[in-house]
Length: 60
Length: 315
Image 1: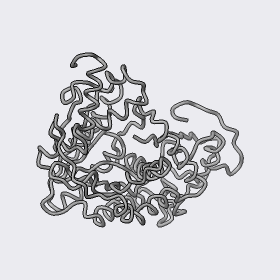
Image 2: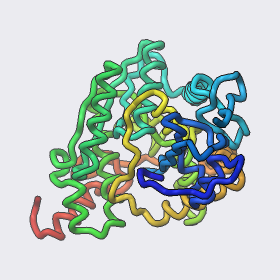
Image 3: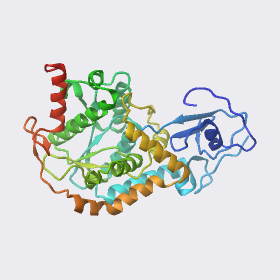
Image 4: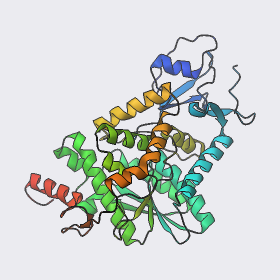
């Protein structure tokens, strides 16, 4: 997340949005890439995926 | 392998979810929607007209560069001249990178680009100001100085309008902040177009992204390959705005569409605010710099005076 590796407890059918919640990240301020591709946060993730969550809303 | 989320309008892979519309969009449909909304805003508020010479304030961040791409397209189709203006405030380790992005994207688009410098125009950089002020105060100096430089340069270059990258998040924050501070009179002059006042010394401001959530200009910049570095100015510590921003983002997360509703509510009472608080006063000229000012000495010259006084001599 934001360039730093974190490990998540995955549950079946888990979505990126759920991962964001687990990490305490607001979806309004962050975007996600799955395996290098920009995706909707409603996208499901599996243990084989590399998910990058990064902040884009800073203001100013 | 999980199945990807599909676009709500076609069978393409979605790149973004827009909770306020409850829709997932693919690259094509997101770009179409984004550009359509900006064009609609520009048309509705007659932001660009035949004969205009448009200046675009480009910091090199996602909002200003996205705006540059859109305005370049709109201006080309209307045969309107476009010039990009960047301001180097002198923020070591931050501004060099964004100015490089601004310059590179202007080169890609074939847009004339000028960089204006605090050091040259004011005699002092933001880093130097910050060394003397607490960090909270730095933003006020920077904002006043930047607006002063941009307005004067735009006017001297014969530009008829100056486009700034204010987005929906900025607008909703400004509206809420002014109500929370009980300063609704400030909102009488706020909006998608215009600014301080209609005056020969003032170059009209236009805000084509005012209905675009900040998060979406980031998506647009990524899709368009603008090579933006997502980061914040090291002096961005305006506590009150940060609190309002966090509150609005929390609200938007729980109640999608909140930022649009705040902005639309403001737009529905904007004329009444104008009538109550008046927007037609005639400001004079600053006796020191000759620029527009509602007082004898403008904010920029007062601030420079303060800084000189602190140091005990001119810089």
